[in-house]
Image (cartoon, rainbow, N blue to C red):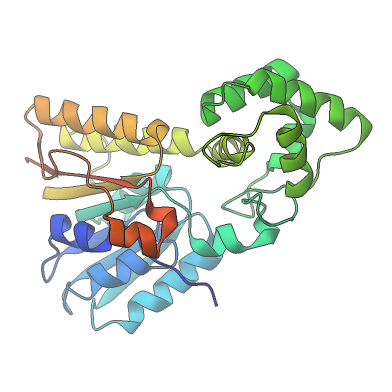
Amino acid sequence: MFRHVPVLLAETLEHLAPREGETFVDCTAGLGGHAAAVAARLGTAGRAVLSDADGGNLAAAVARVREVSGPAEVVPIHGNFADLPRALAERGVRADMVLADLGFASSQMDDAARGLSFQRDGPLDMRFDPTSPVTAEELVATLPEAELARLIGEFGEERHAARIARKLVAARGAEPISTTARLAHLVRQAVPASPVGIDPSTRTFQALRIAVNDELGSLHSLLASITRAAAGSGAPFLAAGARVAMISFHSLEDRPIKHTFAGLVHEGRAEHLTRRPVTPGHAEVAANPRSRSAKLRVIRLLF
């Protein structure tokens, strides 16, 4: 049994302020930790829409939410959250609250078969949705050296990206790089150890995971849909006064969220519910080290 700990749960509930009868949309349901806590406050007239790219996790989240007292309706939508605004509009759903927790579930990180962690040897996969066509192994095996270096540098913010790409291209010519252990070993050979104890392969794994799942492209698409909805165009999936909360884990995610939210506030289309990003306290980080880089931003739309 995986131990799933939703990050910044109390803070998310405080700022979303769920009320009975409202509709809550969780763009990244994971194992349902946030969704269950929100759903418990919606009452029997409320509705919870749960979306996730991982069908197994989505089923677990739906089951967890249905265990709580309320809401009357739980709607699962399997897929990438970039497509969620259109799917909601097609169903006639207007969200009073939207949450996107951009971290990945403990079940994904702790499952060696998913290939997301250098701490567990497994196939070099990294897909959130196992039905997606491209794996990390395929990217490492086929990308030209310059493109591989660009990917690692841009998505991993890795200053040794060129050195790592050169090492990987040389190594794949002798033997396929098909496991997380082999990838991590090669990166560690190419990059000097960090003086602060961060594994040298951390940023390369992040870069490949982001690329495989088009994480930034999906985030930009969702933010664009929110911007259009706030302007009264695009898919009508947000209710008047909708609260939108996003939890990011690195600057590549936080930066576009910050700029989009600030732009909506500047245009008079939203107000900040969090003037500054909310971060975990010492107690939460001690209990759940994976929460240490989390940042929560929340706005309320003014229409």
